[in-house]
Image: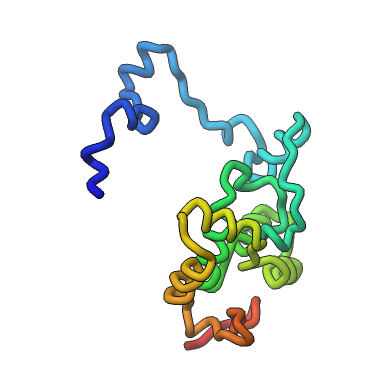
Length: 174
């Protein structure tokens, strides 16, 4: 299907970036918060929002493949996406999170390894089901596609499950 025949400029209006002149005419002024706050990281933003009523996901964190409840709240597809990223590249969202936490001084590397081992690459069945419904495919079709892209240098299939050949925190040599 050629989508260009069905998409109008009106359909794309949310993606149009206003010019400097248009922003000035409307009195829009951009500011960079880092100048005004000591730290405005993802964690601080979540802390700010939680203090004002934000509620995160209520799932077991193992279902989310992460150790924080306050990320990717607007899209369930991000959770299987991160599982697929893990199977393809050997790191998922828990690794992304812990890297920020180590750089920003909330965790040290040793504690970080535990969180990565515990949560990275996990994805609850309900999120896989949601992805399959969204894509209008069966779970079998989902796994057929995922299996084609798994990095076999990093993972092996044991009893129908992809298992890492590596140990988190140790150097990997091919």
